[in-house]
Length: 424
Image 1 (cartoon, rainbow, N blue to C red):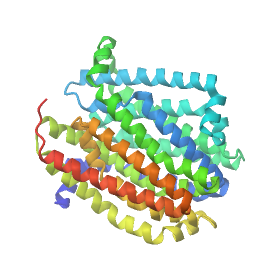
Image 2: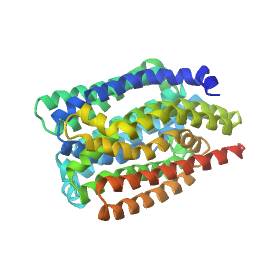
Image 3: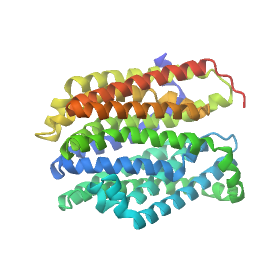
């Protein structure tokens, strides 16, 4: 069965995305030993907090309307969703800047984020860059233009690593990590935008109809109502560890956790995101044709489970020693966090087809309920355990909870697609 999957067009499209993904991944992982010698664990901890906040702002920047771009049968409708997303993103990020200007001191004091006080002004830039990038990404997915996405990912990774190293050598302290991250995001967005405009610019201009945007706001209201809320809760759920580790332990522990999860989440996220894009386009086609969705979902989930199994076992057994050797003396603790987190991240990786199916089948409301329950459970488990256990034991419990929830989601969605009949 897996052999047949690799022969089809789905896997050819995935390989296009993966070519850029692999290069981007190698760039990021390859420079990490340099970065760990230029920046302290505390600096990586501060970046983790920054990224947690930026993740929520990025979701809000487009209200997740970009996910609807792949759904309409007519390109004209998709083009106007694209335009709607751009306008929402620009307006939202202007509001972010206004709030920071007016309430900077209040934001810092209320949320206790003194570590990133000097870089709050960068947050709207990050949200703008990634909001536009995600929108263009879904447009490219709809048009099966995976090569352009691959190129943009390499550009983004190159921009991040080059800037972070350059500023680190220049002794800019932790600021280099923040500026490097946003610089890469902006470059990736610019490169993708130029490619889209060159290929599709005339078609986009010809079909844009601003008067239709108000109708589209309501037609696809499930995305801001459920998908964006779900995504924000998910981002908050993932942000629990760095925030609580900082409260109950110290910034160094946050730094070890942040780098530990980054180095194993990076390939998972890059490979998973590439898979998501191709599978989203394919699954949407099958849904429109009323094909056997259960069969496609089962194949895709099994494929990811097989791909990730041996790497997951390797991380559990060897990551502390690899981290110590690769990153330098003292970074073995980051490897311990990696080995503990792999339970959650393995099932998070293989549940990607199920999450795509939820979006295509317009079951976002139920996914929102799932995320709320997961967030509450994770928070309670980590909050209580952090008061009685050490950081490693607390993160181990957090990981087990995440693994159980992700496996449950896969089984529920498989059952749903098995009985699904298109009725709209």
